[in-house]
Amino acid sequence: MTDRSFIARDILYQKFKSKIINNPDLNRSLVSFQANKNNPFYNWFKYREGFSEKLVTYLLKNLKPESGIMLDPFSGSGSALFAANSLGWKSIGIELLPIGINITRSRIGAYSIDVNDFQRKISEIEDLNFAAHYDAKYALNHLKITRGAFPELEEKALIGYLSYCHNFIQEDRLRDLFIYAAFCILEEISYTRKDGQYLRWDNRADRPQKSSFNKGKITSFREAILKKLHQINTDLNRDISFEKKYFPRPILYQGSCLDILPALPDKTIDFVITSPPYLNRYDYTRTYAIELMFLGYGQAGIKNLRQKMLSCTVENKDKKVYLKSLYCESDFNKIDDIFNSSTALQEILLILNTYKQAKKLNNPNIPRLVQNYFYEMCFIIYELARVLQDGGIVAMVNDNVRYAGEEIPVDLILSEMAESFGLTTKYIWTLAKGKGNSSQQMRKHGRSEVRKCIYIWEKSKLFCQ
Ligand SMILES: C[S@@+](CC[C@H](N)C(=O)[O-])C[C@H]1O[C@@H](n2cnc3c(N)ncnc32)[C@H](O)[C@@H]1O
Image 1 (cartoon, rainbow, N blue to C red):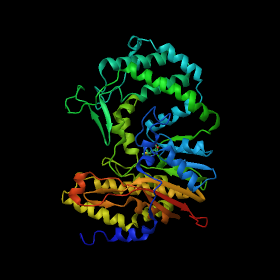
Image 2 (cartoon, protein in one colour):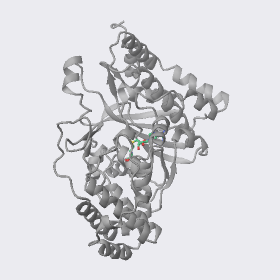
Image 3 (cartoon, rainbow, N blue to C red):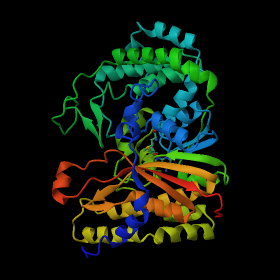
Image 4 (cartoon, rainbow, N blue to C red):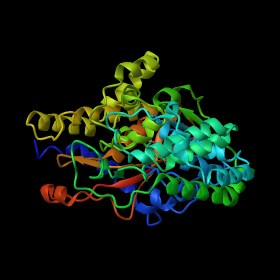
């Protein structure tokens, strides 16, 4: 099988070879959160899974200079929405996780804050003894995986601060922004650090399993919150006051885009700029467990969110029956047929299932994950093709991946699906340097690095769905 195992992927590669172009304007830093690092607002809460506003500006200016309506069905912290707004575009975002929703809503909320009131309130609380305001009503309902996340006294100060906000800040938006400031510093005052795929625990935390990790200085609640409030205040005075006056507001839907996209009307969107979760087992609900707990999510709520997410972890179960319930039979069958017609994907699934039987995978659910990811993406791409205006464009940021040495050309498989739904692949832009594999993986499999890309698909003016 090894000799034949690349045939379908090779054919697919030949089909799209001429579209795979290295774009020297793009690099990892521009595509990732890195390039937002010094921007106001992004400094408030670091959403590391985001892409940069500069990238969105680049795409809009280069691919569709005349403004219209932009959609991001995986809007995360809202970078695409706000960047599009700043160029005069209207924007629509869909996001499932309350983390991204909270970040985006807080930025929208900040537009309507009276900066003088905000500043005055900071002065009022500057010398407050937060712990003295402790009200058990606002205590955190810890999850098993967040218990012991904060030094005890700091958690008491945090709850005292929240109690003060609830009891003494009457104006809703002002109170929300003060509470959001606390949301932004949870990691900083905790024994944890978000590190790549994991939430790492410092060895000073009172946990049954001790790690050797030491995150360095753990800032006190007082120091962290005052610093954050002053930073927000500076940005509100400087940058946000401009946004406030001139930018349209994004429209934001909270929920799964698998549910929400089917409700959007045909041919109403000019540009889709998005980055779905990657097929890399990254579990947002674990990385952001502390923030989810802070927002009131319990074990069951988090589990439910994890299952609703686009399948990107080995725990995600099949959504086929659910998807069937959302569509009329003919549309469902059409999408299902297109998924089944991907020979490259069938080739990969066959190989991964063989590896599974031979116990060569480090998790037996990997084939299911790969299958579900593409199945759900097939519905999403169908919807994007449907809601796009003729001549509309999709720009999608995503990484290819490799499991047990098998390359999964996510870019090519998704582009083939997009073409089946009437989109044309204009480019598969690769970044100056692709996503590296761990040196351990490279040694083991002796393969080159996998592509990190932005696909540009266009809806031809003549195509009828
Ligand atoms: C790669 S991130 C996108 C980040 C975004 N571009 C930004 O700049 O912040 C993917 C996002 O998809 C969200 N997501 C996952 N499954 C979803 C679903 N079914 N519907 C809507 N959003 C989903 C995740 O919560 C995550 O915020």
